[in-house]
Image 1 (cartoon, rainbow, N blue to C red):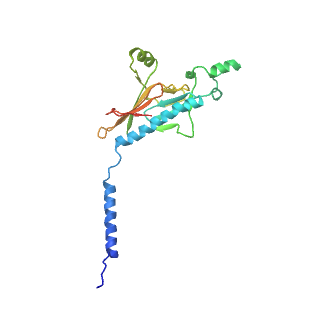
Image 2: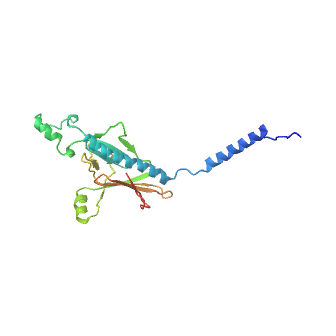
Image 3: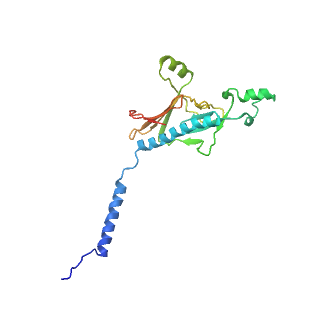
Length: 218
């Protein structure tokens, strides 16, 4: 006897392909989109890596780097160099120029710090609200006395101009103005909150504002 081998017809194969395509499209349509919390986590991780880079870059180039934060975003700044500033030097004497050049950075304006590796301006997503707290003299005196970190809420209502001083400084000595950057969603429905904390020795911690049991370090 001759064995008759049965196989799939072309029509049957086409039907299977159509069914598989429909099933795949249903899976894609029903897959959950990235949650606001996960998207905020990814964004804050980028910011944390940026701060770590600025800390290292300041030391490598011997450049004082500033960070200015307002409600709309952040700007990476550097101090204006003496030869870029008009009318800062009232005396043409060489010694006077040197003293003026390396005198207190508060006497100089600030300009965008342009590097090929990073952007100088970062805009916050519209659905984010931001709070910044920084340490200063009160941080140094009170923290040494009490052993606790003391940060003061910073003003972020003003937009940056060259006369405004950065709230955070990255020094060539690898020291940093201690700060906390708190980012949260404006919507209470899908509320998410993350805090980026940088200590004066450059240590960076990213933690979930709702649950800080598993912080990330950069």
